[in-house]
Structures are given as C-alpha cells and as structure tokens.
Image (cartoon, rainbow, N blue to C red; front, side, top):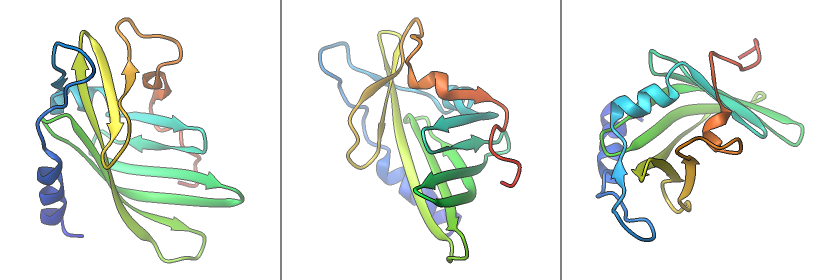
Length: 149
C-alpha cells in the first residue's frame, strides 16, 4: 500500500467524534497529545507488544500458540484522535502480510477513551487520575521488545 493510500484511509476514518453515554460530548485527542502518549514507548500486550519509535517507525511482536510473528512499519496520528499502525507482519518463513489498524481516542471529563476502528467498543484507556488497571499503564518508556526484533 502506498503512503498516499494510507493517508486516504486515515481521512476515511476521520469522522466526527462520537458522543459517549451521557454528556458533555467527547473531544478527539490532538495529534500532538497522541504522539506524547505513545511516542518512544512500547505498548505491552498479553501476547507481545508494539514499539512506537519517535521517528514514527513501528515494530511489533506477538505469539499465538507456538507461532511468533514480527511486524515492521509506520505509525501515524491525526487531530481527529486517530492512531494508526501500518505494518507488514511475518510469521516464520511465510510471506509478510500488510495490515493497517487504527484506534480512536477521545477525552471526556479528563478521562481518555479508546476503541479499535471498525467495531471495537469504547473503554476508558486512561482515567483522571490514572488507575492501576488502566490500559495506559501498559505503555512503558523505550523499546521493550526482544532483541531479535
């Protein structure tokens, strides 16, 4: 996928911010705020993680059963609250599979909500003040992926 196509995909998802249950309406996070939240950090997942380089390079690794997959690509943010990962995932000797995954982020009442674009449910990503079980706490400084990445 060419970068221009990636930009088009981002524009296609740049919809008005949703209203979460109740009011006031949620406000999308800015690109700068998203870059501050994710840049230079590893998002630790139950089966691996993804590193968001300050130069917008994305690398990741997951393990499903006995299969380890590695990813290399780029990440982008928009002023509509989108964080998108475009990467080629490779498992063993198989040909890489390119994919784009986007997450929406909005803020309401100091809490940051997140959902995966394409059908994910909204959940509190970061409470104000932060709670110990917030997904936000899985963002740790530096590249914490295995050295073979």
